Structures are given as structure tokens and as C-alpha cells.
Length: 158
Image (cartoon, rainbow, N blue to C red; front, side, top):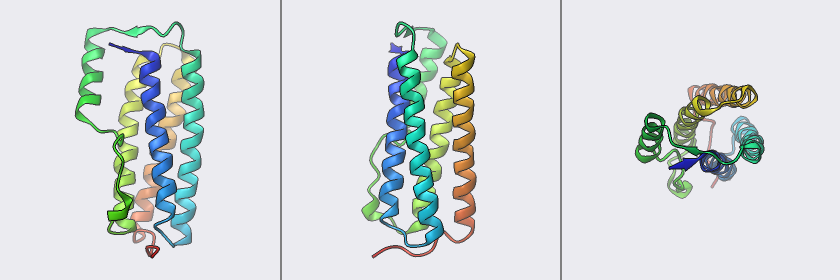
């Protein structure tokens, strides 16, 4: 059984992992556009951490999430997906192209999880906040795909 606070804690952890990944990625690239993109993505992940932290503070009574169908969905999602909760070893990256692919996977996983959170949200304000974050994560995907199509962001730092 999960509480609303536990689910939001997962969302916060996802965003922390994303922010850390993008900051570490900054050490691996030299192309100014890629540096700018990774820095921007890291900053946006910090904003999402703040949003989910506020949502967690507002969670009323830390109600258990007991709906059987929803519980089953959550267990299936969290049980079958890493949702980038595992640490990526950036030392073994082949270059910026691989960094972009990992970032794309992370962003897609996050959208899936946040879409699930949206189905749990009971207040219009929380739904709107999640919609904004999902829209931003989709924008992250577009930016990463554009960078990948442009050749992966250039060289790797030595």
C-alpha cells in the first residue's frame, strides 16, 4: 500500500536523479549548445523538485492509495520500470549521443509516471501543476531529439 506522500517522494527522487544526471553530463560534453541544454534541463528538474515537495506538503492526511486497480497499476509501473532510479555510470558513456539516448529514456519514463500521478490527483491545482510538468518534460524530449538530430551535441570532454 502506498500513500500519496510516498508516491510524491518517488516523483521527487526521479527529479533529483534527473538533475544529478544532467549535472554529471555537463562534465562530459564540450559543445556549447549541449552544455546550455544540459544546464537548462538540470535547472528545470530543480523546479520540479520544488513543485513536488510543495504538493507533498499539501497532501491531505497522507491517505493510503488503496484502490485495487490503481494499486495494481502502480505496482506494475514501479515494479517493471526502473524509471531512472538506478544510477547511470557516466564514465562508460560512448559519447554525447549515448547521453542523449539515456536522457530521452529518463524523460519518457518520467512522463509515464507523472501521467499516472495525474490520474491520482484529486484537486484541480495539482492536476494543473502536473500538466505543466508533463508539458515541460515533453519539451525536454523535443530539445533532446533536436540535439540528437543535430549530431549529438559535438565532442566529449577528455
